[in-house]
Structure formats: C-alpha cells, structure tokens
Amino acid sequence: MATETSVCDVFPLGSRLSERGRLQVGGCDTIELAREFGTPAYVVAEDDLRARARAFLAAGRAAGHDEFHVVFASKAFPCTAVLAVFANEGLWCDVASGGELHLALRAGFSPERIVVHGNAKSEAELRMALRHRVALIVVDNFDEIDRLERLLAEGAATDRSAQPVLVRVTPGVSGDTNAKISTGQADSKFGFVIDQIDRALARMRGVAGLEVRGLHAHIGSQLLTLEPFRATAAALGKLGAFPVWDLGGGLGARYTERQPPPPTIEEYVGAVVQAAHANGLGSGQQLLLEPGRALCANAAVTLYTVESVRRNVSHWVAVDGGMSDNIRPMLYGAVIEAHVADRFHGSTLCALAGKHCESGDVLVREVLLDDPRPGDVVVTPATGAYGYAMASNYNGLPRPPVIFCRDGEARVVARRESFEDLAARDVP
Ligand SMILES: Cc1ncc(COP(=O)(O)O)c(C=O)c1O
Image (tube, rainbow, N blue to C red; front, side, top):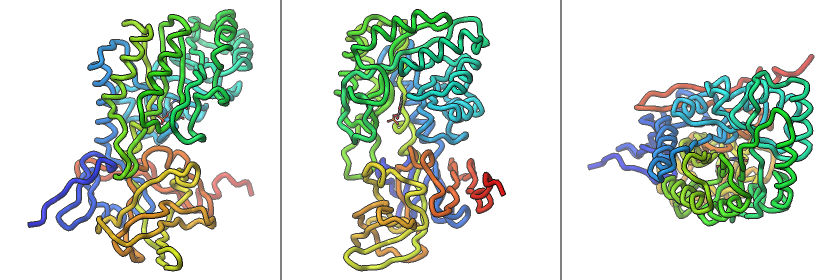
C-alpha cells in the first residue's frame, strides 16, 4: 500500500512525498502551488523558520548562558514576512545598510534589537542608525569613527545616552569555505586586524557620545566545522574583558543529500558558548550570534517549470528561472540538488540550466532526474538563503513571489513582479 514518505532534511521541516509521489511543503502540494501561483516561486515552510529560531534560543538556554541573543542576519532573506516571523520569535536583527534597517524596522524589530553592520557605511546610514538609537553599531574602520564623531558633534543622535558600539575584529582566522564568502583572514575588506584594535578602541573611547561595549567577529559563511568558531573565541579572549561579544554568523546549511550534515544548531551554539566561557566571557556578559543561512536556507524550495529538453554532449533541461533567482551556483560554485516535483528518485543524468543568455547560467551541472519533459515542475531545495536576497531582473525576468505554507494553507507574502515593475523606476 502506498503511503506518505518523508524526504531528506535538505527540504523544509515536515516536507513529504504524498502517496502519489508528489512533494508537499508545509502541507501544500507543490504541483498545485505551481499551478496556482506560477513558477518560478520561492515556497517557504513557515514552521521551519520558527522551529530553527526556537532551536537557537533553546540551545543558548541549554548551554547555560543567560545573556544570549540570536541576531538574524537579514541579508540572507530580507523579505518582510520572514523578518516578521523572526521578530515575533524574539530574535534580534542584523542589518548591513540603510535599506535593511528600513526593512527591519518596518517588519517590527524595535531599534533596541537591531545591530548595524557595514564596511562602507554612508553618512546617511550612520545618521539613520544614530537617530533610531539602535542596539549596536559595529564599527568597521577608522574613517567610520571620524564620521561618527562628526555626526555626534552635529547632534545626529536624538537620544541623550551614548550610542553603544562594537569594534569589528578581523581575527586572522580563516574558515574552510569559498574565498568569496570568507571574511576572517587578515587581508579582508572587513574590520580591524588584531594589531589595530588597541588604537581603534582608544580612538572610539575618545569620542563623546559613543560607548564601547565590546567585540565583533564574523569569519565567513557556510562553515561546516566548529573549529574556526573556537579559534575566533580564543582570538577575542586575548583582547581583554568586554560586556558584549558578537561572534557573527557562518554556520553552514545542508544543500544536498550527498553533503554530510553540518553541525546541528545545538552542537554549534553549545561549542560557541563553551569556547566563549573558556576564553573569559562570564555570565552577565552578552553573547550574540548572527546566523543567516542556518535560520532560513533549508526553510524554502524553489519551483520551476521545464521549458525545453535537448541532448548534445549533456542532457540539458532548461527551466523558467535561473541565475536571476539563484545566483549562488554561478557566483561561488554552490552545489544544490533538484528533483521533478512529482517523480523523485530519477536516473537520467541531466544538466539543469536556467533561461538566461549566459552559458554559465546552470543551476546544477550534474543531477539525476526522472526523464524530465516540458511542463514538468522541478524543485530545488535549500534556496531560502541568499536567493531572494540576491535576485535580479536580468533578461527582464520579473522576480518570483514568496509563498508561505503552513498546515496546508498557502499565502503570498511577496508578490511576483510584473512587467510594469520592470519599468517602474524608468523616467520617460
Ligand atoms: C557580519 C555578518 N554577520 C552574519 C552573517 C550571516 O552569515 P551566515 O548566513 O553565513 O550565517 C554575515 C554574512 O555575510 C555577515 O557578514
């Protein structure tokens, strides 16, 4: 007798194959979603986002650090509904521009739960951060200190209490990840190297209206081992005692069934808390983590429709999206997987191509699919992080909608762009 079967945890929590072998996400049938909302479309299991947020907070409690805060790196999925879920779950928010600050405030994060980043913050962005009196500004370079000093002297801060700041440390630790998403090495465009820290701290302490609260380090993204995080804590521990440590994000996600699972949220938070304690962070001092990908990558899948199939050296399957909705495979060689949404477990070796006018627009170079045909719905899992965020209109493609699914109900939380949207900013 046919029964529902669960799928690998690369897919959102609770995803299943129905008795007919059709993928369901958040209780919704993906073939019906494609029919109702069109493709390409990002489909998010709302419960998955919530479960990961709760897992982070519970792991902090279990690890025994009382002042532990989870700061969602909003760059990973800057969609209002996603931000609102995390605001509602009690997370903080990391923003890296005035636009992200605007979105975070609009989605319901109060300024005292917002951390402002950026290696090239503009005067307008710093003014905005000071005006809202955000929880923390992470200071990245000496020019930014000069700029903050000038803005504070001009009265840019509306609050009379000092603006809390962290100093961004480049700890000289490199995570074992792609160079394009590695930030902790000495020759990074981010932050102060270790031998500049004393001077940076002294300079910041000399600015009236700034309160130096502590240290920040983010060494890279898609890290699959815990050692670099421990090394970062050890590097910060050598810089002295501070009320706040922010150890950034970086925990990797699982993108394919073949990829060994990364450390769990519990293992990661446990290891980081332990390393922070071992290197001098005491109870009562704040420990912040800034996960992006680990909170949302696996919460979403992208649905596409097959447009054409051709065979030359490879068996090319071309879909109706590509690098405009998921640039990660082209930008840094990310490997993802794909399936025909109602016929998993295929055996035809295919190359899954996008529809853009670039030879490099290939979503998956080698994937086993079940004899795909035009009209089939193809699904790529683990597309919740840095897909929507880095989407473009290349070749005049309207950006896809975001559909939230929960308990069998689907709702559009970001609509599909229209052709009119493509010209909306053009001045006649
Ligand atoms: C400062 C900072 N924090 C957090 C993150 C989130 O990283 P991830 O999505 O790998 O957790 C990033 C990503 O670039 C970052 O630059």
